[in-house]
Amino acid sequence: MLLIHCPYCDETLPEMEFAYAGEAHVARPVDPSRTTDEEWRDHLFVRSNTRGPHAERWRHVHGCARFFNAVRDTVTDRVLATYPAGSPRPDLPGKDTP
Amino acid sequence: MGATHVPMVEDLPPRHRLSLRVREGGRGAVGAALGLDLPERVGERARGGGREALCLGPDEWLIEAEEADAAALARALGGVDVSHAAVDISDREVGFRVSGPGTLALLAMGCPRDVARIAPGRGARTIFHGASVVIRREAEEEVRIDIWRSVAPHVRALMETGLKELRAGL
Ligand SMILES: [Zn+2]
Image (cartoon, rainbow over all chains, first blue to last red; front, side, top):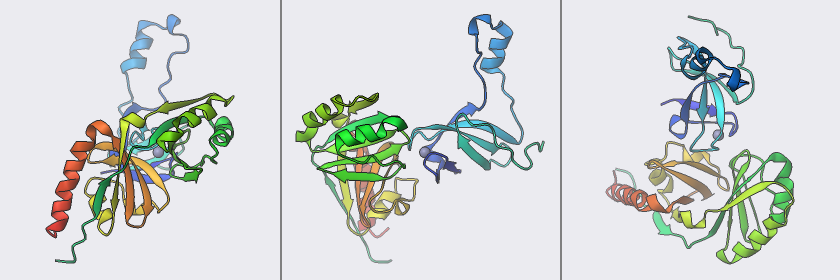
């Protein structure tokens, strides 16, 4: 089981209190009526499928109930950092390891 | 086999409960109306005048009071000139108390969180036997649990199994 640090509770807590919510920093189209079918497809379905550090959304659903972001290494399953929703992805050493 | 400690589990009488949501800018005004200094950090509690607030999230508090206080609470919040939401969840929740030596052992059977790390006087929303609960650590060996009424019998049955295991010295 993962131990995840919730940036709002400021505590490191068991994964069972949390829910995964997909890739982070996926921006919704600003002007949906001017968005092409291809752009909509990319927004809805195309994800980076990263091997290595991956920025993703989590929700502390059985806790403070807040969404936040985490960088998790998809190879080692280690959570490298967590940060509040709306803030930029932190620079981590080894971020670009394949 | 070591000494067997079997805690006591008891149902608590109904209480008035409100789920309160208010943004940072309105926390002071809503707290003043309630007569409570709404705590800022998740897990902290404030008490006064028979009312209690537990901070569950950055903008969420659980307010607890006597049932007879319900109308006065609604009046107090009705006079607040700050945008907030206060939802009466009294009918949704039931409460029970676990106390005595063995309390933390019984809690550990269903809670992934280390309840020993919730300091006495603090509280948290977490998960217990698969159900979302609010736990308040009242003392070293005393915990109050708020749980949804519909899942309470299921969780209580699992706790009875746990008590049997503790009695058997497992
Ligand atoms: Zn949290």
